[in-house]
Length: 317
Image (cartoon, rainbow, N blue to C red; front, top):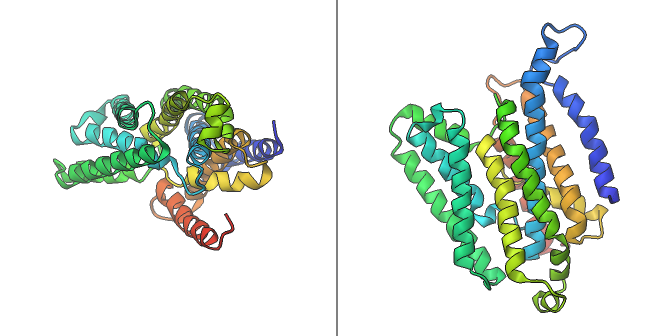
């Protein structure tokens, strides 16, 4: 375990218990009525889910930037998150969300369809350019179909549900969502860990990596399935939460040797920390209704992305 993992792991262990106490009403375990019930049934599953989703997005961002060799790459470029969102929107549009399990299952089915489309279009020997373009095409198609679903919503209530869900949030999440997302994200991060060494070789160039025995088709499948599980599971239980995969690797990279194998685990820990802290902050803010987590992270992520663009323009990245 490298220094970055130790730092972000320690910060995460410190932030987790504090997040359980934070909220519009701060919990004092010694004096708050029903404190144990509130902590165990409301705040603990929400905090764990924030860590799980953030870990999947952080690890996915590190792997994506390593594969594309582009510090501005984001898991959303795969098109898997928009396809997962489209699946969830379909369940809301047809009224299937009344069942607790159908919306996340539709979202996971959408993510699976996105993975299949990406693998089929990019092909066994598709290069990085084709892979990126395929992801952008899938994301554009999913975005257009989602907009179409919103435009022709069967009712104003369905439209409101779709728009609110797309903004991403952890409000009212329970142990059911934790049980669904955790094993999928854990498997996804494990697959990305298997891809770490080949990604290191890829930093030397495609030809050099091939000479070192890296199979591009196997690496592609590891990334597609790994990122698909991480991102798809997160979208399935919380909606779209953007910019985590873009921001986190940049926070971690100065603390490592900058190789993908050194970035994936600490990025997972830092991603969990970022989403946990952001979710705690939106609970504390004194608004009439709770600010959606996806909106809050976009308000952070958009200026951060602009800052990265300016640094790249000056040749500092």
